[in-house]
Length: 195
Image 1 (tube, one colour):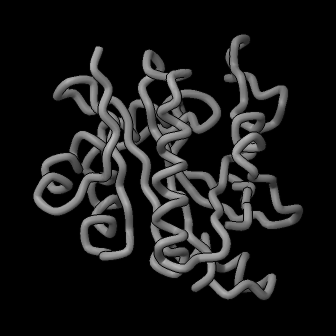
Image 2 (cartoon, rainbow, N blue to C red; image 1 turned 90 degrees about the horizontal axis):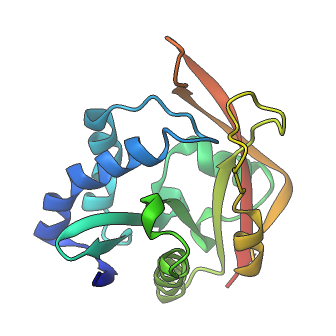
């Protein structure tokens, strides 16, 4: 297996977009997101990463196959629901870089790719002069009936990277859970670190 991790931009990003959308649908279907996703919606959701000069998309390939991707963008370029809690707390959005998501097929986990994804996004944030970097994760109850017995939260990994949850810094975002017909809002906890 030959793994390659690199930023994707320009025409290559246009080509990769539907593959990243498919990865998002596949990965976020698992606990804790339980997202009943749609590839067409995801491709539309990802469009701003093509159009924003300060966004970054990093891909992970096994040969020619895209097996993972991570995205990041200046906080003020992302959806308003994500910036609003920071503004309400007095943060200047122009100081924050937002790590929107990392998706990686299970067979490729535990090989340092997650670290590489964060390294690339943190480097982009520093290059843009940002002083903080943040992401958010869905909050699910510990006794959620869909939680598999072998589920391991990513909190220890994020803490090793220097991130910590910011108490009270929460937003909500809606999607359809597997097995449901309607969209419901989920609470999302922000994690952040200084750069």
